[in-house]
Amino acid sequence: MEELTISQVARHAGIRASAIRYYESIGLLPAPRRASGRRRYEASVLHRLAVIQLAQQAGFTVAEIKHLFFDFAVETPASARWQVLATRKLGEVEALIARAQGMKQLLEACLLQCRCLSLDECARLISER
Image (tube, rainbow, N blue to C red; front, side, top):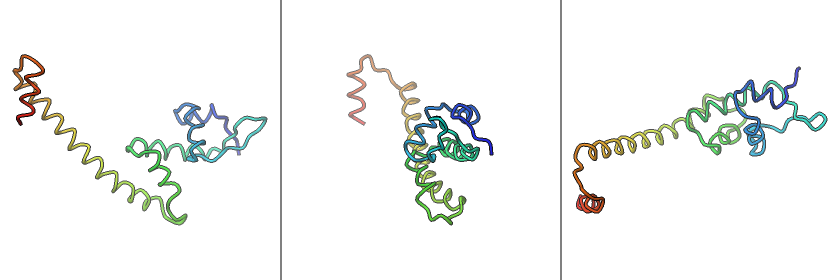
C-alpha cells in the first residue's frame, strides 16, 4: 500500500499540513509511521479527515468530534453515533437560529423606528422597554 506524505494528505484533503499536525496532537488522527523522520500516512487517513471535515461543517466542536470517534462502544455503528450527536446539535442550532431571528428583528426595528438624536437617548428608550 502506498504511503502519503503530509503534503500529499493535505492536498488531497484540501487542508493545511498544520491542521493535520494539530489533529494528531489532540488525538483525532493516529500518529503516523515515520521514515527518516518524516510522517508517512496510510491512505485511510483521508477517510478520517473527511469525517472530521463533515462534522466541522455540521458545527461540531473538537470535543464533540472526539466523542464521535472515541466515546462509544467499538461495536456502535456510525449511524447510531451520528444520531446521538446530531440530536443534541440540532437543539443547539435551533436555539442559535431563534437568537439570530431575534437579532434580525431588533435590527429591523432599529432601522425603521429609531429617530434618536444621540446614543444617550437610545439608551433611555431601551431601558424604558
